[in-house]
Amino acid sequence: MNLSNLKPAEGSTGKEKRIGRGQGSGHGGTATRGRNGAQSRSGYSSKLGFEGGQMPLQRRLPKYGFTNLKRVEYKGINLGVLEELATKNSLKSIDVETLIEAGFISKNDRVKILGNGTLSVALEVTAHAFSKSAAAAIEAQQGKVVKL
Image 1: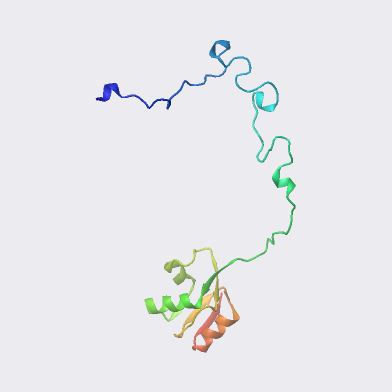
Image 2: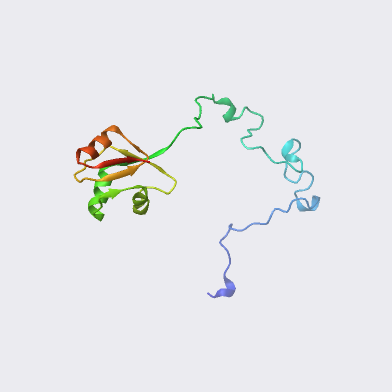
């Protein structure tokens, strides 16, 4: 066996269907598009969600709820995460830049400190928002809460 007698597996290749080449091609007349209808015409492109004239799914389902355009999204950071970060890097204050460098948030995120976990060191924490339990836990350790 050498490169000169290699060939594709049986049935893996077939003749290319050449469309629009007249009757002799075997695909003359309608050029495999069927007899009538939008898809048989040139220039046809289906609309997104079109289901052949059946009522589309996005119109069959009911609308509900609304989107509050003034909603402020916060990225939640737990006290346990602050504790871990402070002990690992021996920090006395944690702010948004520290959390960005540690990879917990991106630069456009707003931060809310949440009360899940325990805190055993006094920290000065700077963030956009605090839950009541988180603020109480920070101040119980003689820490400081600074809202941006």
